[in-house]
Image (cartoon, rainbow over all chains, first blue to last red; front, side, top):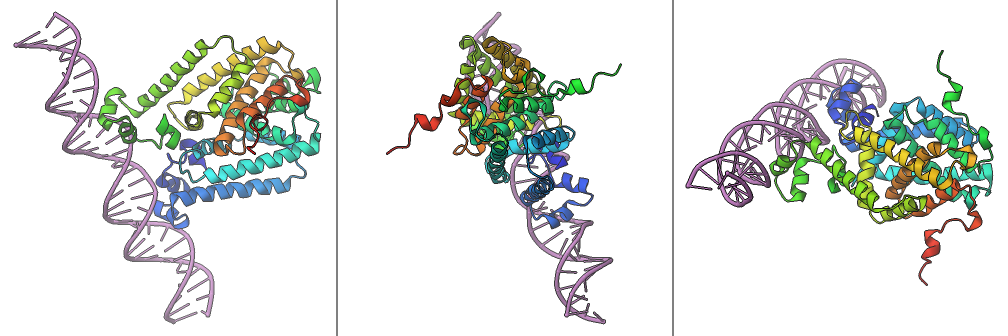
Length: 188
Length: 188
DNA sequence: AACGATACCTACCGCCCGCCAGGTGAAACC
DNA sequence: GGTTTCACCTGGCGGGCGGTAGGTATCGTT
């Protein structure tokens, strides 16, 4: 995962992975017979983490999502692996394409359910949860990209909070969501 | 650009580019002394297109953006090049990293200006144009990724319209934006 | 007619790629 | 206690990688 974050899938060599894992390339190939199957293994491992984390959480709410975004803001490596691989995956014949296609479908369904249990069908602009779900997913991914490129200028967690406020129909008013720089004022 | 869309930057070889361009690898290297400078050339060409198109348009409004999204929906190859390269760029020492960092900064500023001239400071949820701009950029990019992976299920233009309605504060009501499937009803 | 720049070409370099063949030493099983 | 299985190793293979060296045909210029 580290190396994919650093160089992408096609830019990562088996030898480099083996070296960082502390064995020879052939030792690595003993466990994963090909480079493609190694990537599948990586994706499966990530999936297992995700579902375990999801099971540990109780009911998902939009605030759980905000917490997840905040958590990710502290783990740029993980976010980078995800962003690089997701971009990689739309490439021709990429082994992770199917994985991401299924994943996004699953994520959209899950997000729609979260929105429905939280807001019912009363979303602004006559939106249904099913129509808002892809937007929610898009915001999370798009913000990750901007944040990875320019963490100084993009406050991922605050921006995501802004979007949640938008989905609430702006009922938060001028008080709005809490900005990071209001929580951590510059040291004197 | 075609080959980058198909295989990513690191996955694209000079020989492959040369072949598709109809010359030898060394003929290509005559015009672009290294692979990295070739990528710079590609990005510069894209930039020249973009700014030419922007100059041709009059004042930018959110409806111009919606038109751009609709236009992109008919050019998956261009969108794919952009998405793959953007993901690629967060990779270590990637030659396009600086390009995308600057680009996003520029895009956010431009979008904030569009939002301000269109809505003033009266955005829902107490949002300012400067805070809504990264969300707008994120939605566009995130939707592109989902759409590339699953064009059947994700209606990029309709979803973007939904987001614009959200930014208007849902003043569109139940009539909302026009969905693609309402425009093109299934044939009898 | 001479000259320099341009736009390519052939030939080659050393390196790295994913992967295969065939071992070895230790543990597990019967 | 013999056999099988596992977890690795050394060694090598064919091919593709980005890039260099040095040539040649075609220009416009003087």
